[in-house]
Each structure stands twice: as structure tokens, then as C-alpha cells.
Image (cartoon, rainbow, N blue to C red):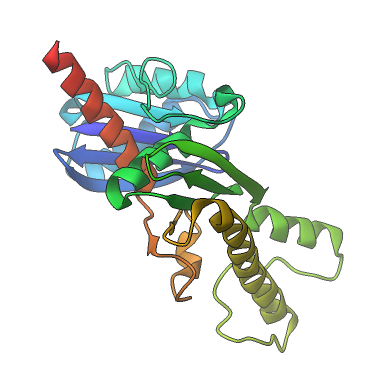
Amino acid sequence: MLLVIDVGNTNMEFGVFNSKELVNSFRMGTNREVTSDEIGLMLTQFLSINGLSADNITDVVVASVVPQVMYSLSNAIKKYVKKTPLNVGENLQVGVPNLYENPAQVGADRLVNAKAAFRKYGGPLIIVDFGTATTFDAVDKTGAYLGGAIFPGIKISMEALFQKASKLPRVELVNPGVNIGRNTEKSMQVGAVYGYLGVVRGISSQMLKDLGPDTKIIATGGLSALFANFPGVFDTIDRTLTLDGLKMIYDEMLAKSFSK
């Protein structure tokens, strides 16, 4: 079995593949002060709940945009799984043509998403990833990564509103179910959800001018489900896109090694 790990600024997502099937996944908060034992205990507990053990894991693949946690994460994998992780961008290449002016500036997760989305849905594509930041990534009809846009994440925006406006409370990020808020909580939810729909439509429409009208728009990331009930915004919501991409990259590495 293959363990894949996507390390983002807010969450670390772990997934286990048995052959081509994603058996299960879990998330834990990204804490830059976390110890290897804390990660290891969470991981072994997750495996145990799903009837697995570290002995079932044959390899580990990691994509990370948070260098500060990599020491603890790598040590946790070595100690609890007895494997040395394969790190995307270091000893494991994505294999996506990267047309950014400075290719090194593109986060590993964005290239992994580009690979997975193109393989699953074809191109051209816009991939909207709802994470700490909301990223918009453009992939052309050949599968090349062109670039995109970065916008403050919806949680960051709501937290800033709470901190800077003394009379506004923290509210749950859910679909408000109404178009006009009649209390403060609903008004904030309407602003957050419909405001973000406006952002998605606005940025996507600008990118479509370069990519063309046949472009598919794919949503992913932890908060993508918030927009599932709004037709016409996305062609597909694919919450396992990054995990699937890590599996694809690993499979390509194996295929190359076997062909030598």
C-alpha cells in the first residue's frame, strides 16, 4: 500500500492507496511546532482504525509547501513506518511542463493538481483550490502549467473581519441558505459564500479569455464542498485531486524504473 501526504499551510492530508483505490484519508492541522511522535501517533491510530498497520505501507510520497514541518514529518515516517519518504520536487519529479517565469516559485501541490486534473479531465483547465489561499491554476490543452492567480483564503478573510471589526463574531462557514441575511451571522455567511462565488466567477472569466470557452473548471481543497450546491460554477468538485496526483506521480516513477 502507498501512503501519500499533502502538507498545506493549514492542514496535512494523509491518504492510503491499495492498488488504484484510495482506501481512506484523514487530515490533521499543520502545526509548525509538531513533534515526530505526535505525527507518528496520529498516523498509527488512523491506520489502526482502518484495520491497517505501518507494516502494510510499502512507500510514502510527500508534497509539501511548509518546509518547517518536514523534519518532524520525515522523522515520523522513518520511525513509525520504517520508510524514507519520496518528496515531490526533490527525489520525485512531477513531470508537468512548467511555464511559470520562475518555475521554482510554483508550489508542489499546484503542479500535482495540474497533473492529476489533466490526466482525469483533459485540458484546457482551471483548477480552483480552496486552501489557506485560494489558488487558480491554468493548464493548457497539452497539459502544460501556465500560471494562475492567488487570492486570500475564505477562512483568512473571515478571521480578518472578526479581528478588525469589534462587533462582528466568528461564524461557521456554511451555505447560508438565503440570499439576504436577516441577522449578523447570516449576513456574514452570505457575504463570505456569495462574495467568494463572485471572486471565482470573476477570476475564472478573465482566465477563460486566454484559455478559451471549452475550458473545464475544477474545484478542490477542503472548503470546495461549500460550493457544491451552486450549479454552473464548476464542472467538477474533486476533493481527492492532490492525493490522486501523488499516486500518479509514484506510479510513473515505478514504470520508469521497471523499464530500465
